[in-house]
Image 1 (cartoon, rainbow, N blue to C red):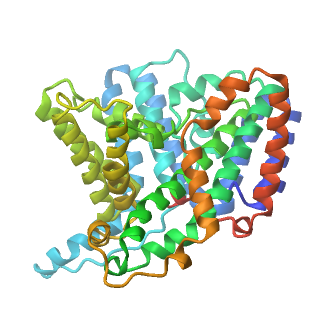
Image 2: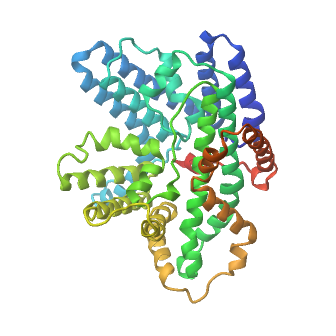
Image 3: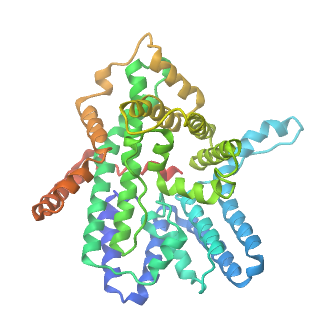
Length: 464
């Protein structure tokens, strides 16, 4: 069920919110769990069993850790492996068997890859289950969590399908008492509308031209088109994913839950490392806390630090998808971060013109180009087309009409902290709140009436 779909906006959300408010406090958690499972069943039907199996594995692990202190490390490791094995089978089994099949054929062993359906949100709820196990292992609680708490933490519908990835030790304490009050609801509604507008008015409107460009052969791209490709996709992806995150944060606040911010204006980055700290923050911190730091982080010398970076980002690439282009994506990020680290003594990535120029010329094309390309050949073909003009290129007016250019320019402006600057300067004035409320009504109406709303395009990160 897509947040921007009519059935969610006008049926599911009003029904769930009103019943949640009307119910006594002691029944609210159970009702939210029911609503979350219903939300998932609508999109994935019988695969809700897979999510329930993940929840059960995480909860049993937590209970065993609580009751058997002596063996808690072994239990935590076994529970994490069990949960991750579910992700591996459904997301990676086909990829690895298809890669190994030619090798086994040489030994007269026939391997037929089994096609597994990739359930929505499996990468996200699996990582939350691992967080549940490891956080409980690291900080032994006085009280055993209830199955209801664990199940709601992993399946909470606002962030179930595409995050942000919420930490167990951040979410569970909020379930003890959740004040559902007027101010929180209004804030949540505001964040939801801004996220909805980001998705529908900017991302959805850029989607057709981005698809058209990346369907082209790189050899037929003109230089302008080749440079536009990663930037237009970057704007599309940012407003799609940050739009989802805003909607998720807003929805959670409507139900009295705070979930973390997932973006911090990545377009204002000054280096790849700075960009990564601003982009998909919940994922980057998850890899930092549960993989990078346990492997030694940056505490064991430069060589070990760089090795850890490469392992983390290759795994991060594979997390995004079981395909070689995502491995390439991870390798390119790791390579740029390695170069930045080696030259950090000589170069300062401060907020200067040169640092932003570096991000525009290197970081953005590398990050978004490798992420969107269907293969390494396509990515390197686009890079070549950036500097070697094609013999013939498409009619620019067919690709970049006034609407596309206007939406892209709006995306660039709004990708910087313009809103925060306005709020900081005028937010204390009472009239500002009335003007913003009127603006939100107009924005929501414009998004609803947009032609891109008709299709209710799934969010890009639903694929992961």
